[in-house]
Length: 101
Image (cartoon, rainbow, N blue to C red):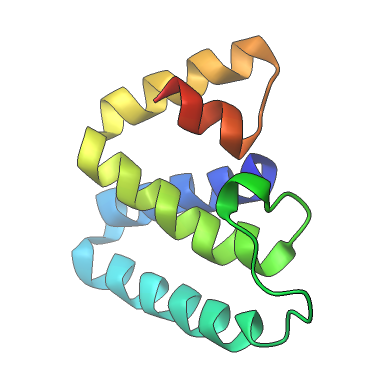
């Protein structure tokens, strides 16, 4: 999950830093629209993010938005430090990141 969602969330951080909140809000809205459209096409129902590895629409949209929200809540520096620490463990899953936080 994090292999897709994390770069997307980090790109939202970069857009916010470089282009401001308005540009970030536009991207967040686009991701929400895509997520809401695609979630209705999942025949098996939508799994929780902790179990969503391999569900592209969840990873790129809901996963990225959740991680971005966490980065806003925790602060970018804390969030990025935790991401770096997780990468060193080699266990790059949403469940591992959630457990670490």
